[in-house]
Length: 217
Length: 217
Image (cartoon, rainbow over all chains, first blue to last red; front, side):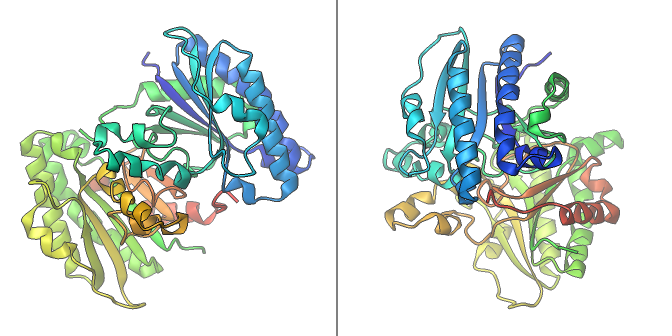
């Protein structure tokens, strides 16, 4: 079976899950922690080399503060939880605005090199597609070419994504790494992220295995 | 019913249609012309204000020349056909490589302004996502901000896309306007583009009408 090297995760539907289950919206985010850990372990099992979680975006921070505080805390907890696993972890996002949580600054420095062991995990925190693209000016100044375009992004430590799995039914990318997702195959799970089931992950892999990868050629 | 202002079309599956119907791959492209015209007229009927067709990309030109010649001719024919309609037409792509057809150069100049009448139609020819993004350096030099990022692309005459409809079953964007598609809802039709049916278009509109547009907020 053809396993994707790099999987991107859009863990959507926490608020809708909360409302459907009689909680207030903000309470949905903590329910996303355990699914995140389960998914990470499944990825390691099947041999995925890199995994990127869509934490929260600069656009998300426009929401009511009771919600922004809740998803920020959930991301802090998630990163600390993942850091305990055998992973090479990096937090990527705009650290120059007040919405970026101090506690996660240490995780934004260069990731530990595990060689071929372990798995690379990227966690997007206060990420913005516009913030990400702005770094392209450097590639111009340095006369870099297409092959280097990812090197020129603020998210330059994150490689091209093979498979994006989005929970929560919506069929859109919502600003998730626009350059790395150029050729990604996109699989949508209709159930909400807190209702994560291993079967959904395996179904996504089965589907990906049947896709024909051409990169436009 | 909530009609999208701007629809992007990825008319995929011409080669697979040709093979399935006993033609050689190259013969599939001409079968995509009539569907393109039907779709344009449907969009005008329902009040879509802007329509963007994914013609061919710089990546596509890596294919065998018998195919590149065929899809280039099909795009030339499609643009000339669309130009006869009541539209404000613009061809967008990299005119600096030999793969850009001379016949279409006149259509790359500023579009005719129809005011509120007619429909804006964009047709991507020899388009490349990397080519498109490279222009961002100008926005930096001029100190532009997020709100201007589209103005800074080579595709700056194409606005943000509300709904992308892709024919041919694949669930990916394949480099289609990475910035304008940031928040697009993506609807996939499993049948191949030459088998276009009005029902597919109406089904996409019905689905889009039920989507919740948040732009991350």
